[in-house]
Length: 291
Image (tube, rainbow, N blue to C red; front, top):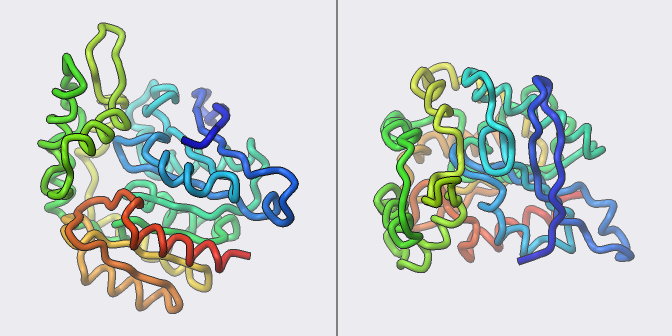
């Protein structure tokens, strides 16, 4: 795993938030002048989700991987209503200011992709390029209901093997090719050892409260975010088994983003890990277009 530095920034409501900073190598022409890669994780995930991406890109690129409020090593919100899309975007805007970043390449998975679209609506000049990983401005109800079913359950486990089996129960349909070693990795990235010695999911269970009230019809405004990405290098990644992003929505995104690249990861659902060979090659092609 590539070396990183743990850093922190503060939200507008006083939360201490954490990010991993994988620095670019010093003394290599052009390396330090590139816009950093900002990796934004899914709803229940954290900075550890991008260990493989950062391990591969770190050194050539500076890679920033935040834990959003209520996840990982970031503080939990006092008010659960702040677990919402625009609050996350505000938190990220303050991260960019704190880290002195004018422009970034964003890799956004699921919720991270929604954040990317929202940022493209409000601060498009900060986005040099974007990867939207299995997410679009229109979410399929079946996928949203599946997520609502498991988020916030607060289960705990006595061993990592039990934890891995629990993650398999939740995500098995999306990754039918995974073996137990893959599920152990997934568990260790999404869970942590709790204060009572049991293994728990590494997020505030209260993130489920605003999720229950989301009306997917209101997300249609995010098409404006897709328009805000026009003219930039954009990569659209779709898991062929996805229940959150449809082929129709993907086609609509491509139509609004001429010049974007779209790839399909066969045999994978929501959301591709970005370690798939097709995803690795496509991310490399995107980064080669970044000025």
